[in-house]
Length: 514
Ligand code: ADP
Image (cartoon, rainbow, N blue to C red):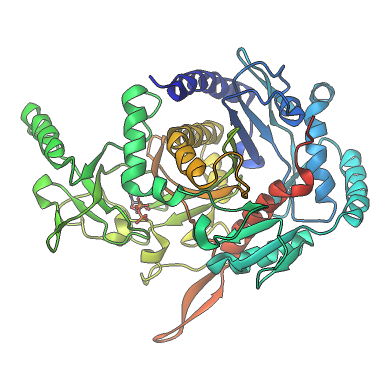
């Protein structure tokens, strides 16, 4: 086992106890923004991490810390730094019953939850009103002194609208045409390489992330960890890579059928470079695979189809969760509290030969379902074909579902997935930005697509390196005439995600060096 996987083993052990503790403590997922910091090496010279984790900087640890989330106000700057002090004074706050602190076996304590106050659809989290207000005042003073953070938005492409709103809310400075002098942050719409001339600052993409998260590469990485830790990674459906594992696929299915002739499988086939449901089809028999595109063998993943998804209003839906990789070394992961759920537009039935081609029943992609006459564009966040994650969680909670458990399972799924892809990502990263060479640092928002099974177990479908940050949607205004119109649900969620990401990446809040 390589060094990395030994560390992974440690981390998985710790996560088990984290999960147990989280459930015991009854952390309310729907009311929290969570940061998960996974560090494989103790950042000994990093007081912030030591404070966050409340540990003695001598252990490998997995830490979770909650961060307040609010609509941007100038005072948020101060709130941001103050979160750290609130972690520092966690013990006192605990005594006041204001903060839940988790302990992870062998690693010290972990901050997980504080009570939340609703602020519209966002939640402002603070230990006490007075403390928050003081922070806000300090924030105003602080904000006045600092020059605004500069953001190069010239390559932002389809994220531009959401990005502009976020920058405006933060009162930062946007450079829509780029800037001769360096900017603090460069926002790229597609890849790290959108602009090759950056030597400082921070870029919102990691080199190699697109390649690493392509369907085949993700499946390969998941296979590696599944072989090592089958139980820990049982949230990723069994997958085979085509064309190379075609024979293996046929043999395995044949063997299962030989044992039990009544078994009925359904598989979903996904082209490697595909997105938005393009080229996806379902099959019930391995012979139905379309293996060739002209004279070329098709690169694809064939995957076990999850045939018993959780339904709401008889419809299949999936979750789009936004995850920020804030840094790779040490690995810091933030999970956005708010995400989206995308609904199918035809009532779900378990796959049968008759309904296999009903994409509106089996595929939750917005890009496909938007073309159904049943698609509901709604201004409300809790109805329609695209809803907020929190509205769905609340609805499930109202039905008696243990959403704390669901949320902690989702967090575990995210951390484990990131751990699985990090070794290769580091190789890409170091090839593009070798240690010692001047270059930017990187962060990235990823889009995790997660399906909840009927038994509430989350399943990872895929990870998008470029989740759509569009806040408009196409609408047929008159027959045959389409226009982009604002989408309130997208705006609420995506502007929040981008704004909070920017705040976390604010260079003014770099960890103090020793
Ligand atoms: P794309 O990148 O083209 O969107 P996905 O892997 O996200 O590809 O799959 C598209 C849709 O197909 C998902 O949103 C989901 O609704 C459905 N889907 C994908 N994989 C599975 C699976 N293993 N079981 C059931 N449904 C799936």
